[in-house]
Length: 271
Ligand SMILES: C[S@@+](CC[C@H](N)C(=O)[O-])C[C@H]1O[C@@H](n2cnc3c(N)ncnc32)[C@H](O)[C@@H]1O
Image (cartoon, rainbow, N blue to C red; front, top):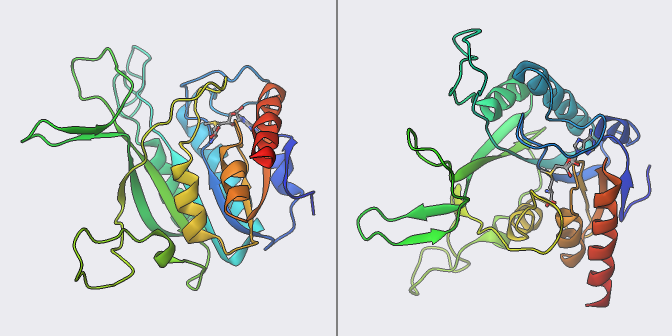
């Protein structure tokens, strides 16, 4: 077993291969999205020439994720979509402007090829507005498109590998506004959740708001269990796991991000 409560500088698949079968309680992760950003390191995922290669790579990683989680384990995979940019139609699917549905193609392969059980496709809402009152909640990056709508939500797939798994719904229930709701512990939060983006001074461009891993870990990982994030980025999953009394283990390929992670984790210890 690799050292826990540590983020290792290693490629995601190489790291996963070092973990024993059935050893992890909960995986919370967000791989790079296809063709969106350059993380400035060799062997990074996301810059594959075509989306099929990217999809197959993520499925290969999910196969290892399935192997390393305990039979009671949970996997929370956040993946955003991409629009095809190349001009010149190479196929019906791969034509310019197409929304590629990459997250769903990955999820379907996880069901069909890996036998993972999809329990929820959670919509991570970044901004939502009430069309009637014109009120809005949350925020989103402005985009320069005017022939489609801005994309203000992403999927978080909640997968398990067996029918009996750890899930603490009480830990994430929403209190009723007025007393007298059906369950005194509160309401099932449903699968459309606004996790507002959090401003940060860190030099990482795609950080989770802390509320997102908090939600997954509180409900999907027992106290003292081990949370794995194989794409640790700036370390948000590790920080939240630590705050919640869980152990963590992480992989990240970019050594500049390792420095951010170490700094953030040591700030936690001093809080
Ligand atoms: C979307 S970010 C994760 C952000 C993270 N959730 C956070 O809160 O900061 C994806 C990360 O995957 C890393 N990455 C890309 N290819 C990798 C690989 N082959 N092995 C390990 N990490 C990789 C990138 O350097 C990047 O930091």
